[in-house]
Length: 226
Image (tube, rainbow, N blue to C red):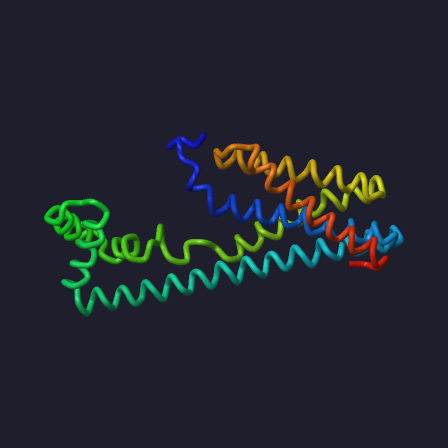
């Protein structure tokens, strides 16, 4: 358990790691299930799996980089507008801050005094927290770091079903390894987040099974790569 007894400060990186690993496991296992169900040649199945791992990892990295960068741009723009408002009309901004505090249950007179003290200490940071809901500094997240972590998590997750096909070709082994990996992922994520394990495991198992069943069904029906 964290020293402060809370797990919320882990939510951002834990979300990204779980998303990347889950996507790697589900997408590659589903791809392979479709190919195996279509009776594709083993070499073609492995080639498609490696290609899917590579493309998926780069896609996750690009998506995370763009997402984090866009969020940082929005935060910086909002902070710039707030800074201009503080320069143009500090009294109105002080009133807004006091009203925000009062709306959270602080007595009006005390809210005004607290708003004054917060303004003296760091007006922009106070308004960023109270008005914009920002925690920490804008652009604090590193886009490259987020992209690398997302790509690594995807590749790590994708390696499990791909490795199963390399070692023991066959749809049954792929399904067993994938479900075991998803169960472990759900349990680990719940443990790191301090949440109940059973619901987390059931969620990832259900959607992973649905995805594999759907692509295997398409592969069986059409007898082509999906």
